[in-house]
Image 1 (cartoon, rainbow, N blue to C red):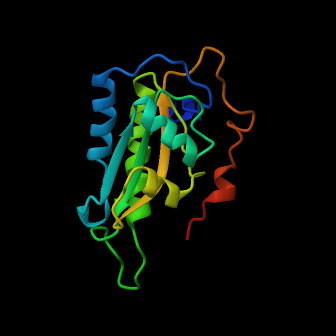
Image 2: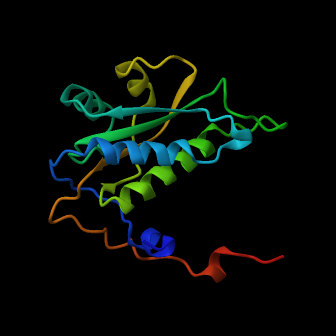
Length: 169
């Protein structure tokens, strides 16, 4: 699929079927994240693939936005590994976002739905999944096949014009 058409077609799926995700497709998605660029190529991402009923139940205690997905990918970054700019700016969240974007678009290409979720209790996630103190939960991606009646939110296609978001200097 042409990249722009893929990016334009993708929407935040908030209703999933219970069809399991094939192992090969999950591996392709994870590999798309693996090849994502990161600051100084430090690759601070640490990814939890949450699939078991027990793990999904734990996740549900940390976020109201799992939407019945059969799996979720939690992107964390290692704050001991991530690059810091000279002024101290941390790039772990940026790197994690790039990794998430690559995986999200790969999922779309493979016919899977996803939604980017930042609504979660990071402390609860760290506790439930026994994350070491150096790992920072950044974002969550419920993942699976969209339910037959899933559809984009009404505001999905509302995009500002380039004139409103771009300035040439």
